[in-house]
Length: 462
Ligand SMILES: Nc1ncnc2c1ncn2[C@@H]1O[C@H](COP(=O)(O)OP(=O)(O)O)[C@@H](O)[C@H]1O
Ligand SMILES: [Mg+2]
Image 1 (cartoon, rainbow, N blue to C red):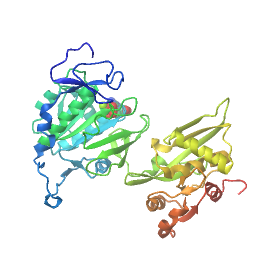
Image 2 (image 1 turned 90 degrees about the vertical axis):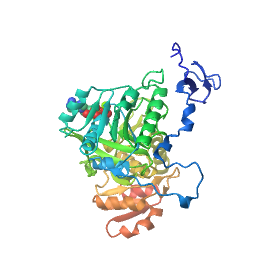
Image 3 (image 1 turned 45 degrees about the horizontal axis):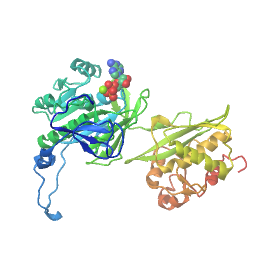
Image 4 (image 1 turned 90 degrees about the horizontal axis):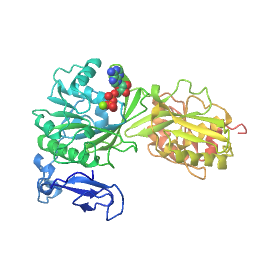
């Protein structure tokens, strides 16, 4: 980058401290960080023509709240039920939706399906900057999509893309890292380019009421290219999660200006493309549940959805040296902490055992309510006693071994009833709220981890 000649309209801004320099520098003179200077456009014009003015709703005079009218969001069906749910009830016209995920997870597939569905009734354009048009066509054929009206464009220059928008109301950009704007010198995919392209798309979206679906690749660190450079510009940010080899994928909304920011959609990758999954039990619960020791089921709340997820643990003798701890879908530090609680408060020794924990279906569980399930699963593995198939557990575990109440207790119990569980072990302080379900499911309130182990008859002495 250092050898490039600078165009008069760009400047270099430190991504750490915001220091501005007229030319590229290896080290920021202000904060001293190396390699943080990113090229950016000098935008004198931008403040004058705020992106939202084009819509005609922005007033530059302060008004009392009673004088402000309601804005109605016009939603369009995407043709994929779960996708609509994650978006908050359908696609909002004129919105900017970012879809992030690992390569090969199914971003292009999902949006090709959505674009083909939209093209039936609305002019829709699929801009493929990574693949050729014939590759996209082949994908449409393979997925047997009725896509006669879908417009395809193989272009990487944003200005050219803009010229091709025509009457289109829905546009897919695949991917934002592959396109560039002529106003900047830096290479496509660099932070400056990505940010500038996204800002430009935002202006087009708001002024022309075009909905953009933007695909973004996740970098090694797990954030979208550049340090979260895009998220603040977008209306909605969705992440596709799941192991590439697994058929099941989760679509998570991490930001949504038009709906809940914590929605999760469950999808299945089939020969005919991506399909919504409504019956979660087959994904997150194993068939052998209740037969082998070391697994426990917990109702986990994700967004507006409660799902019963099975946690599996495996304990083996440490071969040499330090015991290993490994976790998939559960926070590593949380696991270490819970092992310590079990050792100290329940007297189960783990110091010479390797511990492996996995949440079924590749889901990531990060709420405190799963603590108790991890504990009982570990205890079940340690004592080699399976946990009853029809018992679910939830509750936060404190360092003293006490069980703390959790949010959405009623919803969790209700989910257990719906999925056919007969017993649920829950924090004593949550019991009162759930009493109304007592006829349908046996509620076992516990105050300490030890009580939960006893209730599950895991302890040989108890
Ligand atoms: N020609 C094909 N035949 C069968 N499966 C394919 C084909 N192309 C892609 N896939 C499957 O679709 C998955 C998703 O691909 P794609 O939507 O292109 O991912 P992304 O755009 O997220 O990188 C791939 O992981 C692969 O398993
Ligand atoms: Mg792709």
